[in-house]
Length: 157
Image: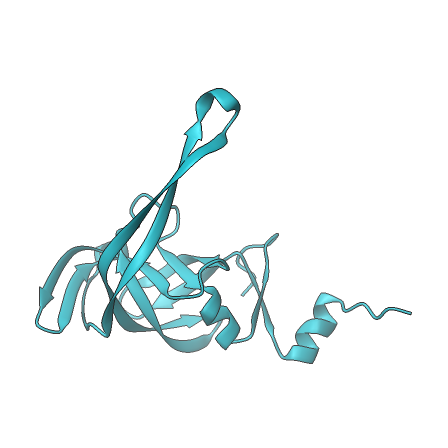
């Protein structure tokens, strides 16, 4: 006979927290922001930022709610992004994929609150103005804090 775990029994057994594919996070001085859970990204969380000014080992940038932040740069990373070129004549089939390397993206450490609990995590800063969500939470963050994602739900916490 097979043993099947329900959400509840799995969460209890592994001391995990169930979250939706989108959750609210609260950054001190910035406010409450919708964050998308990015289970395909194991590296870094990402925060929207623009109007960068580097001063020594710090970076100033504008982020959500036109808030200006100045933070120490932990390091800089190169991020590989890919853009799919769609064949419009063939009902949306991917024709080819163009990959780009985004050099020297700054990484900073930020404190935030999610579901009433405080976290301190590393975020890469990039212009996400064309994206629906200004924050991505990485799979690494989810794993480190025992989160389980229900892709059918949003704003569970």
